[in-house]
Image 1 (tube, helix red, strand yellow):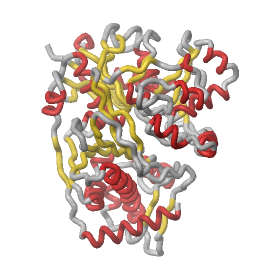
Image 2 (tube, rainbow, N blue to C red):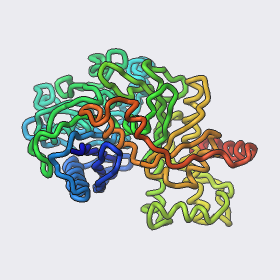
Image 3 (cartoon, helix red, strand yellow):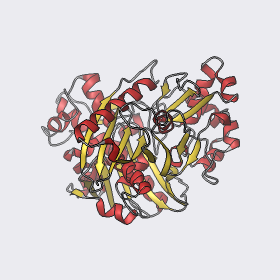
Image 4 (tube, rainbow, N blue to C red):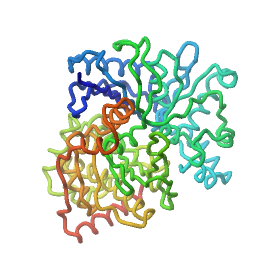
Length: 492
């Protein structure tokens, strides 16, 4: 009898569910989008009920397409938008506020206050992270400070906090399991990289009651089984869990020291496997947990650009330059280059390695001859330039150059973007057959726990390549265009 894995990829703009068999055939796929909520400039929220409705619809849709018997599902893997924060009532399972999304900047002032107190070095040493509104810790405190009576209720153990993985498991198990995995926990500013557990000093610093917190578990184990969830029978093991970027690294089979990937999604995320020991960054990167399987912990260096595919969405929705996101490649190919136009997509600040939350987007170099095709090309190039800055920082931390970069995510299908990225980096880009490596990583982690795959070698043997990209641009031209980018970033 075939064994099937259900992979839930709960992302920033929608939820995708894949039904995958042991041969990595995708038997069913369904994506359901949900609304973005912008209460104020720089604020981003999601309605947790709309998140769950999208997950349920994606589950039903994927299973219907696959035609499988749900009794043959061996396990469920979960991957999720990281740092997005939910607080809910333990008795009713009702959220007490909208989820505060990872992109939200509402706690920037609180972060700045901690920096002004001189806490940055200490917190970075404990967590591997920088003090930034990106992470969950200050989001939790904001909810407790702005929902009347919630602090007292949290201290009394009436409320639960979780990133989206925790909220999904709670819902899937009918409220029986309040857990998170170590990769998501490492993104909260509340977990110690040394002890791999919640840190009482950090909880005090960020004013988060311990009674709110989920249990920290590994990334490939059975956390609980389904109970009373619409569209699924009871008793299916929930067996794999990792934050989206760590899941993508795992889905790219980057299991060895120095292997790296870049995911082109709403943002762009570069992760490199640094092995069994954390590598502190001296160049604005994050040190975080990749995954834990059994007793073995793998650490990573990470650099994130907050805006990647979201810049293309802005061209579509904000400016009306294109009708659909895939249209940007054809439009950009109408010109040979951006003709000196640079777009710094700092629409929500600049992430690694700059960490400038107050930076704003810049389009410069515009002339009378600039067309929407030049703007489209500059948008794609801006995404690639951000990754160049991150990779240079990563190479400096590791004190060795990268030789190969695996790529995935929706925008990795854009050949023009991939070629320009290879031109800038001067390293080989490798694109897999299955671009949805985030969901694939969740499937691998769950499948390992329930015996669909036997070990990491078995997983690696399943991974398949689609295409490679190598530098074609003249080195002098590369150096010139990079210099123009640095000038543009300085204006942001």
